[in-house]
Amino acid sequence: MTGTAHTRTALVADIGGTNTRVGIAVGTQVDPTTIKRFRNADHAGLEPVLRLYLEQQGVSKCEAACVAVAGPVRDGVGSLTNLDWTLDTETLSHATGASQAAVINDLQAQGYALAHVVEDNLQTILPGDVAGNRSRLVVGIGTGFNVAPVVQSLSKGNDTVVVPAAEHGHVLLPTRSEGEKALSDHLHKQRDFVSVEDVLSGRGLERVYAYHAIGTDTPTLPAAEIMQKLAAGDPVATKTADTVLQVMGTVIGDLALSYLPFDGIYLVGGVARAFGPYLQNGVFAQSFKDKGRFADFMTNFPVFIVLDDYAALTGVAAYLKLSENS
Figure 1 (cartoon, rainbow, N blue to C red):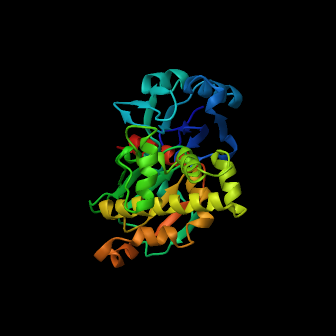
Figure 2 (cartoon, rainbow, N blue to C red; figure 1 turned 60 degrees about the horizontal axis):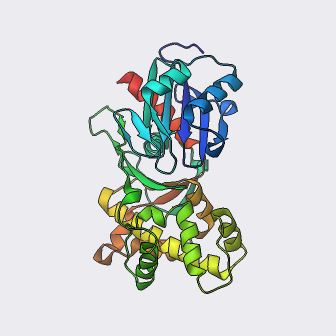
C-alpha cells in the first residue's frame, strides 16, 4: 500500500456493537469493492479482525489507519459500550503497520461523513431549509444510542468541521406521559438507572415489546422479528412502535433545542433505518414538535435518515484527511 501525501491509502473501520465494517480509502474516497463486514461475535477482538481483513486483501501494512468505535474515546483509547472490546492507537498501529493511527467515536465519524453523503442516500422525514453552512446533528439509533453535533468553522475562508464527542445514550430517559412513566417504572425493576438507550436501541425495542406483551401469550422476540410483526400489523408490535416513536420524538426534539441544528438532524443506524417507513405516521412528528410555546419554532429543524450503511467509513477517511492537513 503506497501513496503520496495527498493520495495515500488508509485502512478505515467502523466498529458497532454488532458488526465491524472495514474498507480501504484513498483520501476521502472509500473503495466500495474493499468494504467487508464482520460479525463481532465471531471474533475475540478488533486486532484479529483487522489482521484477517488485511490478509484477505493481500496487504501487509497500511500508511494510515483510523477506526470509529461505538463507545467513549479518551486520549486515543476507545472502549465499546455494548461489547467487551478496547482499542488504542498503539494496538491499531501494531495491527496494521500504519505510521498514523487514530481512534474516534462512531458518531463523530458519521458527523464527518455528512458533507460527503449524496442526496440519494437521504430520506426526508421532516422537510426544511438546508443552507449548508450552519450546525447539524447526527443521532445514532442502532445497537446503542448516541449523538454528535456537527459545527462549521466560523472563520472566513475556513471550511473546517468540528464534531465533538458525546455519550447521550446514557442520560436519564424522559417520562412526560403516564405511559412513558409506567414503562420507566417497569424498567426500573430490572436496573437502577433507566437511560435513553434502554428504549431507543435494538435491545430497547425488545424491552418495550416485552413490556407491552405482559399479560398476553406473545413471546419475547429479537428486534428483527418485532419489525417483521410490525409490518404485518401485529397489535403488540404496533403499540411498541408507537411508544418508541413517541420517546424518539421527545428525545430528538429536546436535542434540537439543545444544539439548534438548523441544517438538519440526521438519523443513522440500523434501528433508525428500520423505522423509516413509520417515522412519518404522525407520532414522531407530533412528539418532536410538542414543545409548548416553541412548537412552531421546531419547524426550523429538518430531519433525515442516512440510508448509507457505510457512511461512517467515509467519515473516518474524512477525519484522517483533516488530521493530515491540520
